[in-house]
Length: 321
Ligand code: BTN
Image (cartoon, rainbow, N blue to C red; front, side, top):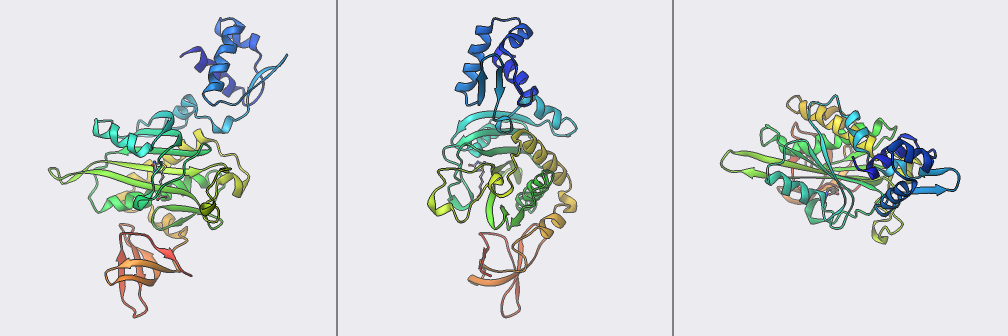
């Protein structure tokens, strides 16, 4: 571990309290100037460290930092060997995860970024990803029937919902891949993968998750009425390391339960789509119908005004009333 990493670990363990330069220098058998240089390096990488004469250094943005040691401790009981590759900035964590997966990266590899320059959503939409969010993509190699691939996105939504419940945050799930809080979007999920025509199964899946944790002062005008963040809605500083670990623990549980559809009760009970009239692309074209339930593979069951039913598996369901 480099001096910089040791200093960061020590500051994190101090939980926002001051650590004196002399104490750190003694602990790591280096000069106080070396400690100061390590702190300057950490600041340059975006760590918010306050320095006060006679008191020392302290972290002021504890909840925003990703701490690999704390993370490993939080996921130590998982069957999956979750490994996080943490980047400060990337075009899209899904792109990076797909690149790694195509080079043979194992299931359980997670690409985490502090911000994305070209974050992507479903249907070619842009996903605004400034600093202050949790953006990551998980590489999975599930041995599941093709029918379960759509369910994987829904099961991820259930996992994120349950993880946020651990922090006392009750989100609602909008079919198929969005999480809402007080009527505005706080999280989006994008699943992508590589199909092997030879093996007739998915080579790999990449599940990308983006959660807005803090208010974005530069949120584009057109998004202000539809997008929000956890802090604005709950006044809670959700710790990135703990939230990431909680989501991955829940995801493992729900993926293991996919054959038995264990995600469906949570997905159904917390849906903000069911019971509403929605605009969907049906076999008969763009139509309005009542959303009444989900099929086993997370398709949306709708009833048309003439009483006929259809399971919608593509596109979105725009809520009308
Ligand atoms: C959507 O809103 O339609 C899905 C948004 C998914 C965003 C996440 S952020 C991490 C990962 N990287 C991306 O480029 N997209 C996903």
